[in-house]
Image 1 (cartoon, one colour):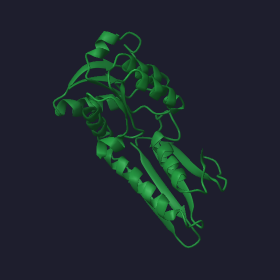
Image 2 (cartoon, helix red, strand yellow):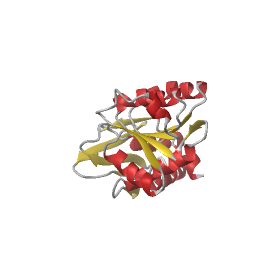
Image 3 (tube, helix red, strand yellow):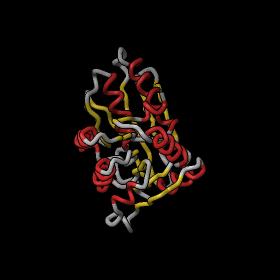
Image 4 (cartoon, one colour):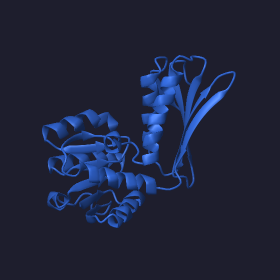
Length: 237
């Protein structure tokens, strides 16, 4: 499979290593030096694009893939205010898009565990839910896309919660997300339900970027030759 890496930072380099180890070929690498000059013809050489850039570039990159009919796997976060527009564009152009806030297989299992725990906690109003996420200081968005996904899953299951807030005191209807930035950590996400009697917590700790990169390559393998809108849940079925 021929892959275009749209975004060639630390994650892009991890994806490259895993893709090559699985027998794939990297036909285009887009970074700050060629982000404004790479051509549609270069992009069309790829069977699928993997987009891990920065929020301010993501929409343009995704739209170029859609417009050139290159299936695109998107791992960049903090652009979701435009997600519905992108989906409509993809459908109108008979394109293929797979977005996930986190491509780690472990995190996607954690998503399902989070949903199940929130469902179990629905009748027990005495438990207050809080979240914490820890990332390296260079992460541009806070809270992380993964934390937002986790919070929205809880909101879907708990009628008493309808909003999340970050690094501030939460009202009764809100979930507080504590977003911490420190040095040299790939990522930790935890959810805790506290009552006067006890606490229940679940946690995912990433040891390195390899899990994210492997998941992105697996997603690209899944998306090749497909049309439509997909998520990692489709990949893991």
